[in-house]
Image (cartoon, rainbow, N blue to C red):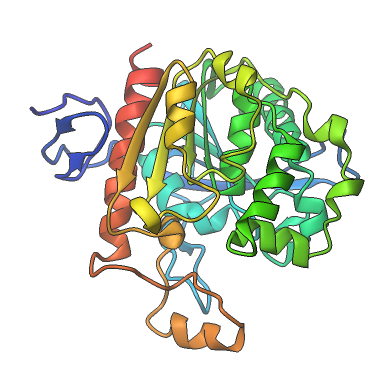
Length: 350
């Protein structure tokens, strides 16, 4: 059936996990404006940069967000005039070693469809500043989310545009872990340590942390297993979430908000440590979707034509690798469709 989604432009795709299909809808209602801001979280020793992508007028400076030697990037408008309405807010958390601009394909699409997207560059866990022993402090990322919401809902500029009663979160990979904690899940350090031991070097996440110098016996267990849920975030999406096997069962049963899990690939093609199917079973209001033909890196931006060649200087860097003949752009459309239908139901229809 056709979905009457105000302000949402969706491609003609089958929605895996929800049982819907949709035809193309009218053109975008808005332009995608971007601004960088800084926040000063109390748990950090330095300011944190945040990319805000928002519904905008057709002014500002047209440019390509996220473009560099490796990535194609996407069109946006730097410092364009925000549309003066209240919009739902979506916090977007990147994966380990990723960055806010690299997820511009998603943030600009959401902004054009009526969402304000705030994407932090998590300190010591972002491009050019990726330190495994710091990234393992997953609780700091969750605290980043709450600090960012505090800032935007009290800022003279952004509080006039953000609907504080309609806040969602999207996280990819380690960003999915961030959103799990924000939703109220509590991690289990021993479960993760046991999983890594049993994986025998076959889990990329375990390998990255251990090769990066993380000594599990020295991790602050109380902080790692603490509660960081933020009730203001009323709908959560986790894409290939890290630590998928390592959450306390009782905390999953207590999550009281809608969640959508998306796995990239299917079966053995899902990246080890990120299979979220059991999480969707254990959480009362959770949905689950698969994207066949994708892999873990399909969520990243589109690589330049010479991207794979450029990466040969780095050992085993697979971010431009594909596992099917489906172009990454088409996979992005399918991922966006899943996300948009979920956000429509949980934020726009409230």
